[in-house]
Length: 312
Image (cartoon, rainbow, N blue to C red; front, top):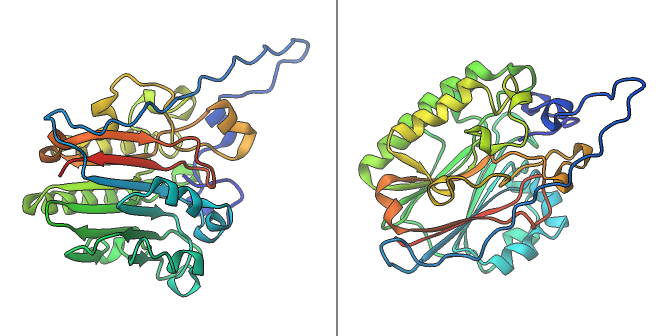
């Protein structure tokens, strides 16, 4: 989710006051003391699936809000501690020629793949870093109108596809909502075609809070990017096509579990956030699902990382 004050204003998302549900206090009345924030505590990792298999694949996804800044904020230290088999990054905002040496030289991940915007420097961008080499790697979704902004990388592994995506934002004023709707249709078609060949894991910043439980202030955001009926319906259609939101599969009633907090108004310390980052699975992979973690104590971006444990 994009921020106020960013250069790429078309990527800006929700209005800070609306997101946080705040309004000026009425003159002559004392403002109510704010309630203590309800925080989400990530439970211990589950390493066994419902069908009794041990997890053998660990995937981490993180919208880093600028790769170079994230590296300076010691994001790689956290990655080395987490040690996923595959690391997927979104909103890298960094051309391949400008990548920091700290990340290009990582021996833990000898197979690195980058996609960036063809038209705008410092905009969008995704990456995938793998410990083992995929069978094949492709970029985009095969539609020229959607593949100019560096938003999708797909890696084929023996048992599944891994797709990482930074889904377009409808933007402040919903100026890109129509484009977002066409993207959702094309992206779902792309995923469904992959799923016919072998099951897939989709991860990344999908720029939508699907249900009211997925953000702090749903009432104030129904006309804002990331929570419009159209965007939510787009995600519902994806699930109806045979895909599963792995976090809600495991934790259907868990509230206050967010992955994005605007930098404004101390939103993160108050846990006024949105769940925008997902692991979506083909139905065929769900029996091997072990856990979907929200690592909300990891700093370095306005998003936190998420990690999937799965038996494949």
